[in-house]
Image (cartoon, rainbow, N blue to C red; front, side, top):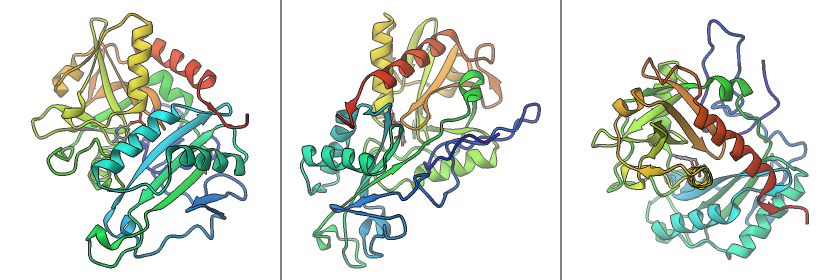
Length: 329
Ligand SMILES: Cc1ncc(COP(=O)(O)O)c(C=O)c1O
């Protein structure tokens, strides 16, 4: 069964479950030709163009070297969810790689909201990129005088509801999360080859997502999601220093846990801790909050999404519908 059209490129692909009705991934790994929007308008450096005209130079260092940064942002019910946090992280990524974003945060907010308006969407996904811009074939970023800003608004279909009800299976992959001393995973850069390699391993293993460890053998994160486990009503997630992105959805879970009087501890843990956890879930802007029920063939807890995870998902859904920066006011 297929849900409606979706365009997000890096999220988990789901395998067919032999005993169940076939469920296609709603958030696809396969590139699709469109944003899912009729007569889509894509923002490039202050101008809106159609999908066919939305092109960048082959000399852009974003293409040549993955030299740039990005954000994936969701909007629900006519409001952009956690927009300020996403822009904060974008600016942090830019600072870290010495990239000057060629506009103010206010201008970026307006451009982003205008892009959603131009595409007449109430619910969807934004891909916001800042590339180093056009240079020559050498990698020296000093050649690139004008960074480019690209904003793409797309429709998005979530995983089929069954995945939230029944949970995902993950496998630990051999590809390690890049060491913070080389390319720091806290920078949301256009260079996602580390994650892509892990994703390929998950695909080959017919798993829904790849669990990535760091060089110390501790859990870092999945290819596009942060990881949480729950043991004896205590919630744990790897610290940023373990090689996890400072996920915006991750921070929402901290807020929700606070409302529920539950403690979240940022702590190093191993895959053993996942095997013996009562509950496990992943968080990400595209995937939202999704339970994990199997890791490396072991059932987690009783193999069903746990009660705390289920409560957190319900509260998260309320927050996405009720909070955010208004698009049409
Ligand atoms: C590597 C990685 N980890 C974690 C996340 C989750 O972060 P967020 O909740 O901000 O989308 C993402 C998604 O952006 C990601 O790409």
